[in-house]
Length: 173
Image (cartoon, rainbow, N blue to C red; front, side, top):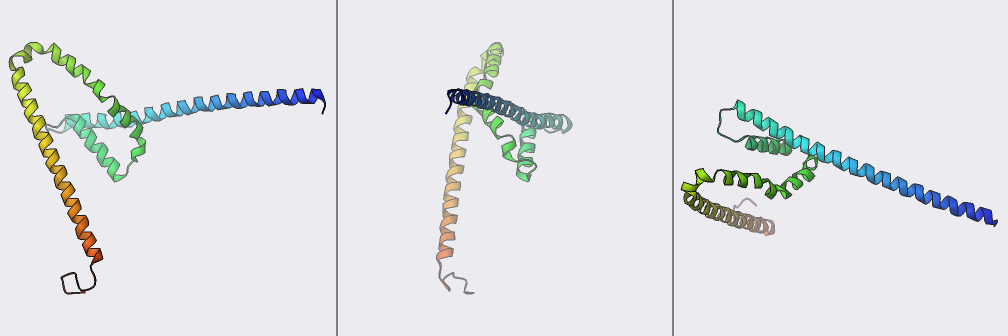
């Protein structure tokens, strides 16, 4: 082969690699933009349900927080299949991950209201401790009941499936 041809081929391959690299960087940039747009869309969906919850809170005369209306409405829409969970999943996970950060303003608010809370802080502490123990006990008992119930249902189903003809006890087989 001619040396000029070799130089041209090596130069061409370098240029092709550079173009491919530039294209891959460009595609990576596009993927990041698409991800950012997806997060904005998901956050927008969550905000719409929060806004509808606020509207329901002002319209309905029930003592239910607006966030509860929004969560119930979103849950209902998810269960009825108006949109799949994947439409809000990533942003929902992100919001759950940063949830501890959301308690900082509430803690600062408590510090600012210390003059009001000072006289009853022991009562608040006692109520918090007892309500925490109560919620833990009820959650534990409910979980144990559900585990026993599902285990007994599985055992009954297994027994029914393994029963031979005439052993079901009803006399119809």
